[in-house]
Image (cartoon, rainbow, N blue to C red; front, side, top):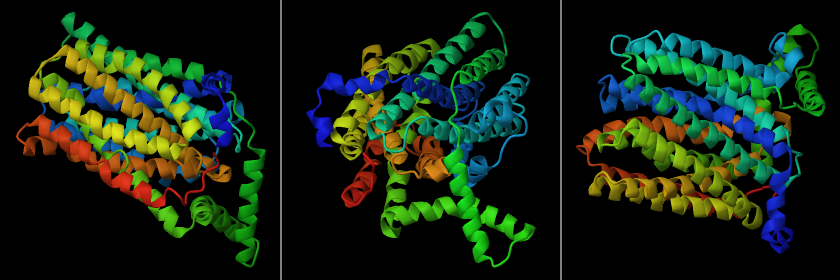
Length: 457
């Protein structure tokens, strides 16, 4: 850490000039875009078809699959996609497969009316979420593997670029979705959202084309280490036949990543890490799940939301993510996470002011800028934190496990966000105050384990 502090800010910033950062930026965009589809786009589609806040909130339970994608992450680490793996590589083959599923799902959505087929709409949304969550496992693994295991500064810069990419895919994807929907609505199309989903399908195709420019490192060392674990387990079974080989492979695939994580950190610290990761972004998720509904209810149009929440928010996110990356490099991810947690709690209160004041474009812009600033700091610190924890032998599985634990808190608990607003009789001001308080338990957890963590910074 002393080396970093002796560097000037411009010298530290040079880490972003690495060509690998552009590839990581693109991977982040590929990962972030599907959240637009099952997030703000689906929410507004259901809202404008007359469904209630509670229904929209509970429909958001489809995000819960992100909390459990670690369950099938071992398969993605070991199983190859026929033909595609040989042509594109192990990671890219999985990504293209999942992108294709999302594309087909969008075509199906374009043919459905949510008022009469809500269950089918949500089911297809669930399929998109599963494909997106599976894609995220592979994207994160490919992103981490672009950088050497002991390149701590590059890993933290890569985390910043991944976050910039994610928000680029999410924010600019939102601009495309909202403006396209409003354009078709103004043309008088009755099913303007269904037509919009076809346009979003074109973006998916563009993502697949961009993926071809990202090279995939050969996993020779990872494959050999996995085989060694297989052989070790097989030897303990006492014989060598097709049954013991299959049992060894399955055990190594599923249990190996978990054993590695607990062995590295120790049982108590590992449990504490999982607890912190689960709690860190709950407040942000409650706010995020209901934000677009809040904007709509106080009088903002889809184009207003696209401009301030998506367009302006993207610029803010890019700037402060890069700054957050520099802060993490120079001060360490632990300090960055404390700062971002405090910022998240503070900026949520700006939405309370907006709720009490009423429609104000200036206050809306200020709230969005500071909220995105806090979210940028929090996300880059969080991504760097868990990226520095993973074992490269099980990159996809361990990152997916940690990421999924974090998502579990954000998705399962935040599904009740609409019900909470209804319980508060639509008092958005109190709602946002409660979201600010939700970050406190996680910071207490972090304080308890901060001196015992093993991070390769």
